[in-house]
Image 1 (cartoon, one colour):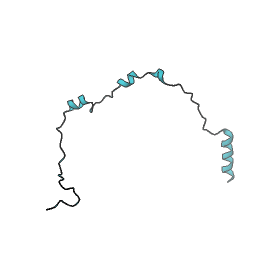
Image 2 (cartoon, rainbow, N blue to C red):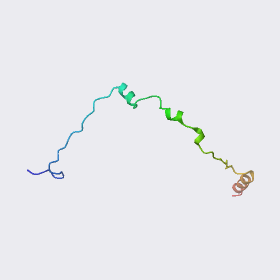
Image 3 (cartoon, rainbow, N blue to C red):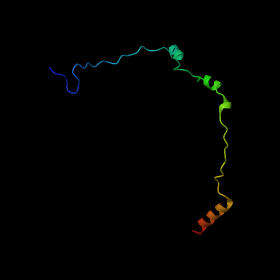
Image 4 (spheres, rainbow, N blue to C red):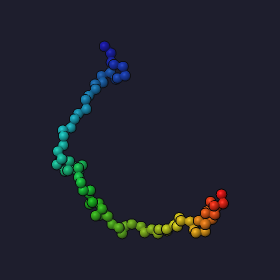
Amino acid sequence: MGARAGRRPGYIRRRPTRRAPVSPEEQLERGKMCDKPDLSEVEKFDKKKLKKTNTEEKNTLPSKETIEQEKECVKSS
């Protein structure tokens, strides 16, 4: 007979291989299952290498005059 439609000639479908279950101890050794994060990189971090920045605080609240104008507009309409 011939090859099935949609498949290459000589193509063999293989089943996926299953891995053996891993014990929790092995997972801990591999670093996959840990309650505490690794802080070694944070401990090595040097704050002195950071650039200084100036922050400007913006007042986004309207002034009293603006609030009064808005109140008058609402009352008149």
